[in-house]
Structures are given as structure tokens and as C-alpha cells.
Length: 328
Ligand SMILES: C[S@@+](CC[C@H](N)C(=O)[O-])C[C@H]1O[C@@H](n2cnc3c(N)ncnc32)[C@H](O)[C@@H]1O
Image (cartoon, rainbow, N blue to C red; front, side, top):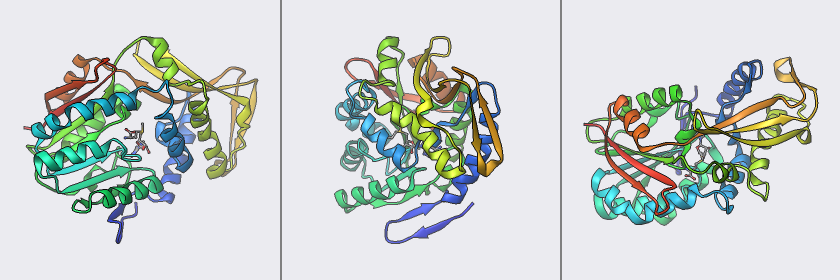
């Protein structure tokens, strides 16, 4: 794995393009030969996927971004007072759109000195970090291009660090993956550090499905873009228009699954891997899960990881929540 520093942007690259493709090769071999076929959600976020996600945050049906922005707008001073964080490390920071609200409150309430955006998508991270530097010239900004499943040790040391994980991204993990992820986070935390975790709450399945299958088709394009990426990076020959976007609510696991459903039986070749993959008519490839939460589950999972839940804030409609877990 490569490690290099680039001035003047203050960016640490833990995950370069070659590392990404190596991980992708292993994930495709494992995921396309399993039943059902799956791919990890991280591969939705190439440069185009990140742009499309940014568009998703503005479609009418996708309420989580608006809900989280409302929570931050209403309670960020309380969150800042409870955490007293001097360093804010944000995992899966994307465009850092909502982060500004939190940064401002932490500067006002807790003397924030350092912001550490952390994302797998290098171009998005560099642009976002640059914009934050311009907006907050007194703040030290150190971006990390990395995978939050393995690179958490890249987060710099500091007093009273807050690790923020917004955008309901934790929902992309299965319960087992969440336990591993939270254990990894707690492992790099010191007493007095906190975890600000954004979750989407269980609600009417029709609203949930609509949020992942908007009428304008942006989420469908975001989902299918993973096939475009496989064609580009691994020389695959997916016929994009022979797969349909599906958003499915699983009431047992209480999660949404994004899937790509094969129109007719077809064989897809992945040249770089010497792989031929058979899809039966109607067979689905799962590209993302998005788990929905209840307060009890969040509290239990934080406690199991070794954190005390000291805060829980929701938007007025009760659609999404932010929890604050402290390491004692
Ligand atoms: C659902 S979006 C949320 C973006 C932003 N935090 C928000 O609230 O709008 C998930 C973000 O996590 C990033 N991401 C996904 N998997 C990742 C991984 N394994 N390591 C680092 N970043 C990841 C994506 O590139 C994307 O920016």
C-alpha cells in the first residue's frame, strides 16, 4: 500500500489508483462467483459515481441529506459542547457539504483546530478539502484518501478528536461488518474522543424505496455506473441497458438493497480477470445495502464496541438521527 504526502493540499494518499484496482479485482472474483452475486458499495464511488451521489442528495425523494442538515443546523452547538472536539475527522466525507455546519459550531464552541476529511474518492476529496481551506483559512486541513475499513490509523493524533460518520453511510455495512468497523474505530480512539454517527431510521417502506428509486432516474444511473466502471477498469463487457435498477426493502433485515437485474440470460466477460459470468434471466446483482436503524440498535452496537451513547438527536420528522458515542 502506498503512502505519500502532497503539498500544499495536505493530503495523505493511503489508497492510490493501483490499490483500488487490486481490491476491485479481488472483490469482483469473490462477488460475481457467489450466490447471490454481490459487490461492495465502495465501488459505486468512482469520480462519476461521486458526482451522481451529489445529485442524489438534491432529488426530492432522497430525504436523508436534508434531514441530517436539519439536525446539524438545530443541534450542532449541543454536539460541539458535548464533544469539545479539537480535531474533526470525517469518514466518507464526500463533498463536505454538511460538514461546514459542524466545523463552524466546533470552532465557536470547542476551539476546533484541525479538520480531516477522509474518503476513497481522491478527486472529490481534493476538491472538498480545497474548498474548506478557502472557507476556513485558520483551520488546518489534512485530507486522507483511504478506505475506512482498513486505513483508520492514518487519522492524525490530537486532543479530543471527533470521528464523524455522516450521510447514513454506516448503513452500507451488514451487522457483522458494522461490528468490525466500530471495533476498528474504537481501536484508534483515546479516552475523551467521540464518534458522531448518522443513521437513517426505520420508516414507511414506500418512502424508503422511493428514496432509492427516484422518479428522475439519478439513483438508477448511480447504480448502473458500477457496470460502466467495471467495463473501464477490468475490460468487462456489461451491456448497461440489459440491466435494470431495483430498490428492494427487506423487512427482516430492515435494509434497502440496491440491485441490478439481468434482462434475459446473458454471459458477461471480464477480460482482465479471464472470467466469464453467467446471469440467468431476472438474476440480480446486489450493489449496496442500506440498513435502517432504531435507537436501541444504535445504543447496543455502540456499547458493544465500547462507547457510551451520550447524545441522540433527530430531525423534526424523525427520519434520521445523529448519535454521539464517547470513549471513556
Ligand atoms: C453516502 S455517501 C455520504 C457522503 C457525505 N458524507 C454525505 O453525508 O453526503 C458515502 C461516502 O463515503 C465514501 N466511501 C464509501 N466507501 C468508502 C470506504 N470504504 N472508505 C472511504 N470512503 C468511502 C464515498 O466515496 C462517499 O463520499
